[in-house]
Length: 334
Image (cartoon, rainbow, N blue to C red; front, side, top):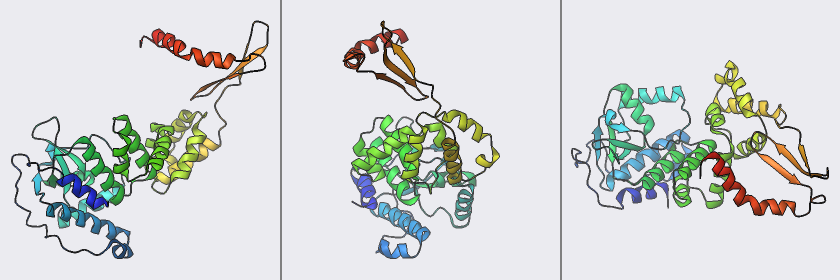
């Protein structure tokens, strides 16, 4: 199913009333749906034109499905409960503001009635347009539709992934946040248009890269999966916090674009040895080295010498449940 069809299905699956105060009349400045050029032909005209054409087609499809466009006070519209963007270009924002100033908001945003605050709304997609019209002091043109949390994140993920070109790490971070909020992987797969194996890989990398590192680097739109995966491996056993503190105080890093910040951080990590201690050895009562203990910033490894203490490792594994209960009791966590 195409992204347009998926969103159309989300928005027309249930017959729901718009909130009181919303007009049911079709907007005068949204033309009726008509036949559009196929995506291949549009793509030949350039990536930017393709994005615009896709957005306009999608907006028309929503209107043609019977959904009205209304004008809302931006102060009544809250952002989505989950973010999928790391940063934004000031130049892109300024260009959007100027475009809306000169030509008006051509493409409505998608919102839902706020799930917990009467009279307010929550954005599914269109955060950049909302920010621009707020800056201009104008009302925001919006499609209002009752959506569940799952429907909202699918609409948000598909729209932003396709038209705003979410970078690899933004998709990974979005996937991790959704999973941590309790969404099942079927919903996340639909939101990001990923297959099961792809989703498992992207979540693995998203969890391996510490959030402070992601926020310091930014979206890095030109940096793909292989380089993020390689960095995830490098970070294991490294004192990345020290490197991050040093770099964030460096103007060359803070003023660089996101992809350059990735390259600088990657080089800094590669130039530093693993921040781990020498292995400690534990000896049995007879003085034989029965186990080695290795520590790093992210893990502790216990290596049992099977020649000295046969089956000792298996004994430890069997005792883990009881050991953990004792550990939890010592921490007061029950």
